[in-house]
Image (cartoon, rainbow, N blue to C red; front, side, top):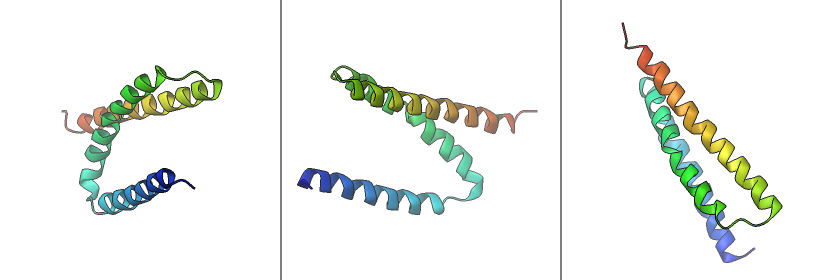
Length: 92
C-alpha cells in the first residue's frame, strides 16, 4: 500500500465519520433543505467529470466516467426535485 493511497483512505474514512456526526445532529425540520442543497451542490462533480473526460483514453476509464456522470446527474436532478417538493409545501 502506497503512502498516497493510505492518505486517501484516511481522508475518506475521516470524512465519512465527520459527515455522519454532522448529519445526525441536524433536526428533522432542516434535513430536507440541507439534503436538497447538498445534492444540488453536486453539480461540481459534473464539472469534475468533464475535466477528467479530457484525459481518459481507456475503455474502463470511459465506463467509470459514464457511471460517475450518471450518478452525479441523478444526484443533481434529485436535489432539485426534493427542493421543488419542499417548496410546494409552502404554496397556497
